[in-house]
Image (cartoon, rainbow, N blue to C red; front, side, top):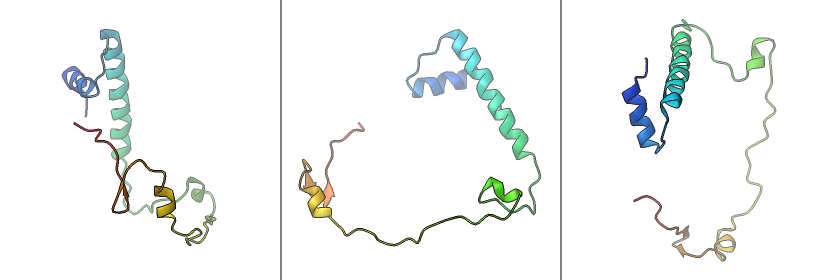
Length: 99
């Protein structure tokens, strides 16, 4: 998948970026280079290959040192919400940020 200049301009507009012509050309080349790498990786046949949990697992078996998922603190919602500017039915109220 190759990105075109009109597509890049649309993305820049959506991101509210103003790109100079030199920046546009350089960014277009970088993004298309990245997309080329992704297409090369997608072309590799990975049928029958088990996903790795850790990259070192290729060299030797690895045991992840995970702790037990247990509750270590009590629910302190009321205490935490005492300093909040606005709370309703146990939820923090915040100003609307999306128009």
